[in-house]
Length: 214
Picture 1 (cartoon, one colour):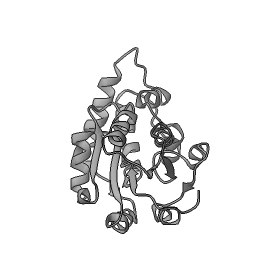
Picture 2: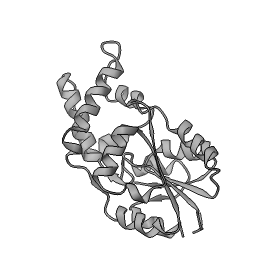
Picture 3: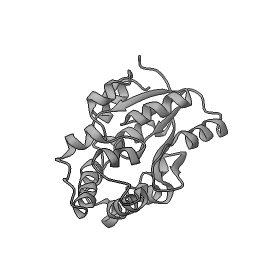
Picture 4: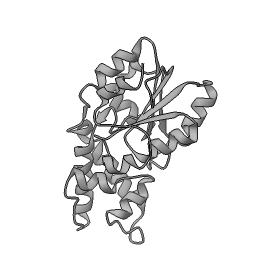
């Protein structure tokens, strides 16, 4: 992918702009320990197993949904994740700088698999909401897919010349469904090895977006 001008930048939030991976490991490990499960060994193990839909990731780490419902575990996780406003969460280094660089001449949007009200609370907490033309989140906490709300946005706003920037294989899948370009950043929720299977540029840091987007 050569450097090119994009009119629209569609950002993922968790893991891409928000550095919340260590907090996610802490939260899921607490939910697992409560059930007598073996916790994840750290960020690398988490990045190796994380994926969408979220229910599949829960099953990979050992949840047995014949014994309890996915909804119960997911609600417990989300409650802990949003306690104390995310605890260790921060914006990724250079995230605010990049948003500011594009603010004057790009239409920037957030497309997230997070529930909309929780998403808005986090974005407002970090005081970056004014960078975005729209903030798109899901109607529930179960993080199935964001393709539908992305497609609605593309159609409703007649979006052309757009790129999606994320940190997971699901972001790549969403971009392909929407018919737009994609960049992936490997300091979020999935390992670089996983992201490289998508066949699009995989960056080590958000600052490298400047090499591809003008």
